[in-house]
Length: 357
Image 1 (cartoon, rainbow, N blue to C red):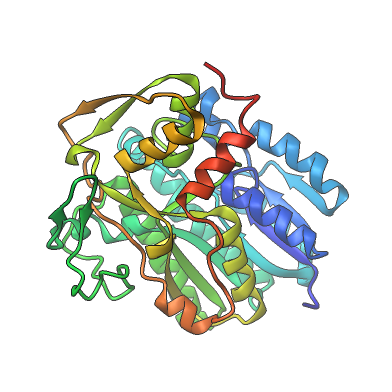
Image 2: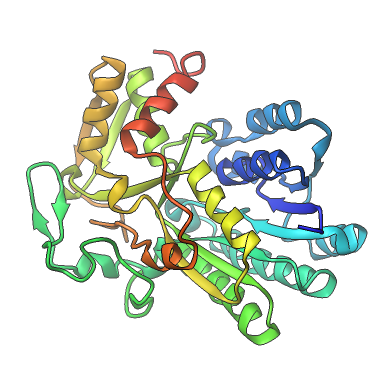
């Protein structure tokens, strides 16, 4: 790894901050780009300022922060021009992450998610085209197509028949067409396809990671974003949690931020061009909403307070488990280390002081 600088956008967010710590720990210098747009999206609950303060303390002088908005083309161009050929990796995590929120301000959502990603790609192409470019996309690029799978209702979850080709997880051959995506899903599709295109058209080492539920103790948990963290927060603070639709039996796979970032490192060490990977907890780490509450109650010893809203959220997945076979085939040394109970236990332990009834 001759080039010693990693640029991370959304560096105070969940995956961004995990990336900062991880690559600084490998001896690289990390340049963070984050202007706490999450505070604007989700209010005080969602602000990442606490995480940024912690990051600066922990990582020290290996970390340099820039309060740049990814919609600011000139600002990004200046940043990359200044860093020059020292950049060895770019991890683009900055985004508007909520499909409920996107419908309120579609221009903001698209300008951040789609145009912001294009701004990043172009800055990298102009200044460091050989640096691997990693993009955190989303399984929402498949829209609600997963809901047309032949699901079977069980006691606490929906499940695919064991002989179904995607029983072990949905792979990258699922279509992204003919489905409802939400405004958020559509802006992420635009970004996702553009990242692939810069790989194919300009021969840049780009990778799209289509995440399921990304989670970990660095999550600023708010109702519209951060599923497992918000479940744990609600149980610990005895907040009421609204379960929307599907009887709470909708299934999510969950990947811990450190497992995701170790996948980024694997790609960084052996980059490929225009790759697309579904990335999540797979069969190893998944749960339904009601199973998550059962686990959180067991871990905390506190009964969960939930109510049920019949109407499912528009475009919500009834069952999602990521198929990891393609990534594992390309990077056989990588493996998951956290499952859902381990993730929830860590959240409980990490937030004892923060989340109190």
